[in-house]
Length: 86
Image (cartoon, rainbow, N blue to C red; front, top):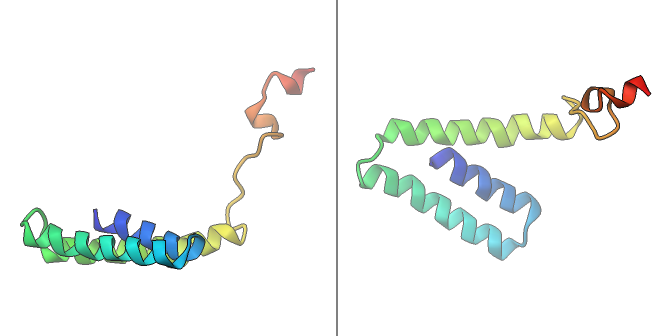
């Protein structure tokens, strides 16, 4: 819950209007507190979720955006095995 809500808030800061980003951030902070307050998770679980969000949004996403991993596109032969025979 924590990692997902924080990752979405981080994404909102990168791609959306500032007002929407603030709303997403408030929701993410609320999720962090609510998971511990309602005793659905321990505080260490929330800290692990924060760490996962920081790693994915702070390290992995920029690496992927720089072309760290090439994903197949619509013209690739692997996606169209019959087309390669024509």
